[in-house]
Image (tube, rainbow over all chains, first blue to last red; front, side, top):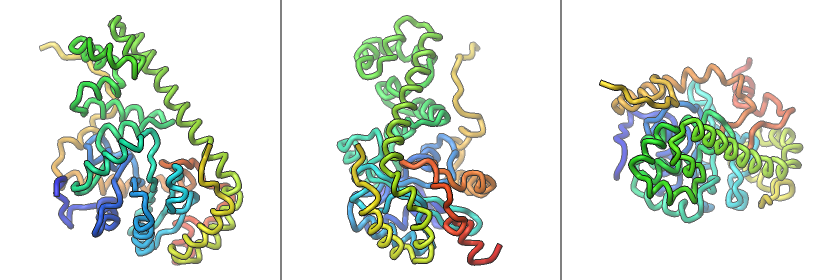
Length: 272
Length: 75
C-alpha cells in the first residue's frame, strides 16, 4: 500500500476510525479539516469528515463501527444512500476518552463532479490512509467561511501543477509571479477563472479586489446551496428534538432504522 | 539578499507541521485535539461540515454527547 507510515502506537482517533471504516474494503476517504493535516497545511478542525462510497454495505458497516464506539446521531439525514445520493450529510458524535468526537459523512461532496469523484476513488484505492488530494480539498474549502480561503491560499502553494496554482491561488503576488512566467496559460485559464484576466495589468490592488469579489461570490454560492437544504429540512428540523429523544435510548443501528422510517415521511430526498 | 514579498495566509505555528516527522505530527495533532475540547460547550449545537449549520433549538441536553455522559455518570 502507498501512503503514510501509520504505526499502531502512532495514530490518532481519526486515523483509527478510518482504518475501522475501511476494514476489508475501502469505504471512506478522509476529507476537509483532517485531510488538511495530512497535507501538512494546518491543524484547524476537531471534527472528522469522510466521503463514503455510495452503497448500502458501506452505510451498514460505518453504522456498525460507530455503534461499537457508542455513537449517536446528531441532527442530520440518515446514513442511507437514498438521502446521501442527493447531497445530504449525516452526523454522529461520541466520546473517546475525554475527547468529543464528531464524525460527518457524505457521498456527494459539493463542487466535485461525479467524474472527479470517480477519479478520486480510483486514485485513493491503494492509499493508507486514504485522504482527498489537494485540488479536491481546495474545492471542498470553497465554503461560506472566510477562514477556509486562507487554507486554500496555502493549498494552492503546495500544488504541483501551474494550472492548478493559477486556478486556486488566493495571493495577488503569487498570481503576478505566475503570470509573468506563464502568460499564455493565464490567458487560456481566464475563461474558467475570470479574475486571471486582471493579472496582465500587473496591478496588485486590482487583483486583490478581484480576489475579494471572487471570494464573496463563492461564499454566497455556498450560502445559497445550504439555504436550499435548510428549507428542505424544515419539517425534519421541527420534529428532530422529539425523534432524537426516542433515538437516544436505542443502540445506533436501531436508532438508524427508526430515523429512516421517520425521514421517509418528513425529509425529502432530493433538494431543488 | 533581497527578500521576496509574499502574502501570508496562516501563522508560522500553523504551517510548522510541514517540518515535523510523522511521530511529531501525530503527537502534536493529538495534543491539539485534546486542547480543542475546551471549546466544546461553545460549539455544542454547531456544525463544521455538511449541509447543516445548527441543531434545532429545543434539542435537549439528553441528546448530546455531554447529555449522554451526564445521563450515564451523573452530572
